[in-house]
Image (cartoon, rainbow, N blue to C red; front, side, top):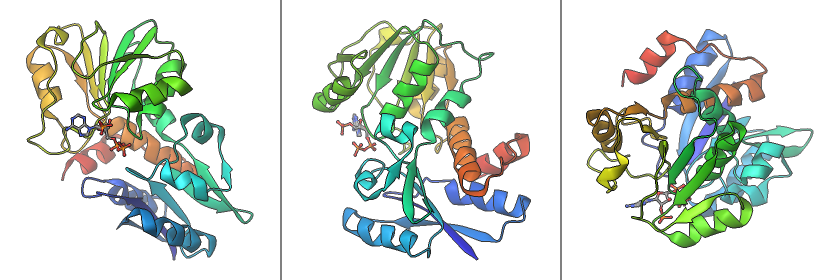
Length: 265
Ligand code: ATR
């Protein structure tokens, strides 16, 4: 039986095993998918398991999306551009590192919900997933991308790679049509990001990459103020589907039943 895993730390919130095992059943694939909580020192041995074909493929999540890169033989263009890997597998004795977060984000925003062309976007956070969001937004033709992060240096590092972004001090405000939370603040139900009240205008679209809990305090507040909101579930599903396609060459079904099944936790 083929073995797949997601590695990260912490992994309590991950729905990756649930979605991949669901698709295995649906597509009659004889495989298992589990969570493995690792620390940095485990990465080398973990890669060896992939090389030895003990593990067929893996999703990589926080905080390893960048740290795993030094062990990868070949990076896809997406992974190279984002400097972030969330999907790995072996091909002809090489470890391949791919990024499906960019596509996951891009596909999660339906034009009938919001058209990002020429919009000003404020990104909160400069962690592992932020480069993928920046690249997805570029593909959508946004006008301006402003990044603010508690540790400003990390936002400035992003600016070295993506010269087109603007960087703000944490706590400073800028006018934006779209506000995207890429920080981990909200994973805990009591977490709350302190944002200036002036940002919560009813024509602002709030997006949180967090999908579990379903509604972070940020989204709750934005919704109360009459703003449109979206959580990270569709991004999660779309990145998982793209990983599944990469490993099994089958595009899995994404429908209302799947969404209901995932939300039913
Ligand atoms: P990493 O920082 O290792 O890439 P991550 O989970 O991908 O890990 O990113 C976490 C993001 O959430 C970062 O932007 C982090 O800000 P710092 O760079 O200042 O650490 C942000 N974050 C986490 N806790 C936060 C908090 N209490 N307030 C504000 N931002 C926070």
